[in-house]
Picture 1 (spheres, rainbow, N blue to C red):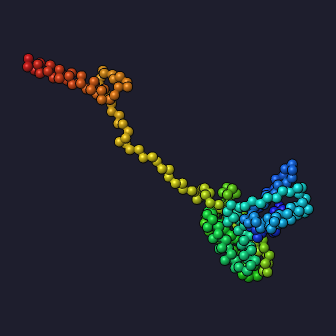
Picture 2 (cartoon, rainbow, N blue to C red):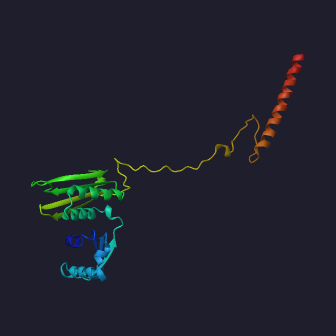
Picture 3 (tube, rainbow, N blue to C red):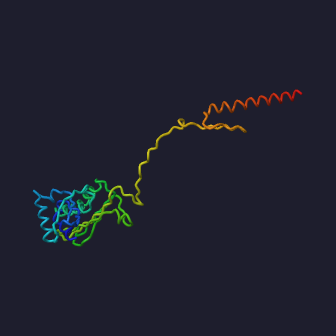
Length: 242
């Protein structure tokens, strides 16, 4: 936590996000995530050399191996947005303008929702807070603990101490109250006329051999039935005559 706080103060202009420390038999690997890695490295690597000496002397880290990683989308990182809003307030930008500017950047990056809370002596001598939000942002439940990212940034101004709190819901998050509507799966069109129509002809006392074509089956089954009907009609006519 001490290393994270120190790096956040030293690298706030570089868009510092967070740091990861991994111990190994050779030494300690330190990965710094920032929006502008060039400012972390410095000219000819001077800034990163100074950070290496600082970690060894002040924080007693044995053989630190520093590396810098770039954030894919800095606008979706609440710590970066909070630091940028704090720097805007330090330059004298009105707090409402700075908050709306931060919300616009987050929404343009594709986030589902964002909320920015600014606390301090905003307009009077009495401290208060104002909340700015846009999009969908859950308040309670598992999505808040699992998906919502949150960061807090403090800054000292002439009026006093100001606090900026940023909460962001990343894009493409499926929550209960705001589900994602998936696109329909295209189904392959199959014409009914292409499928063969099964026709059955049942005749009492006759069985057809399996595997024979249907036309032959019809000719073999229908022909005997017609002959039998004619013979019966002739017998009936002869009996009537008698």
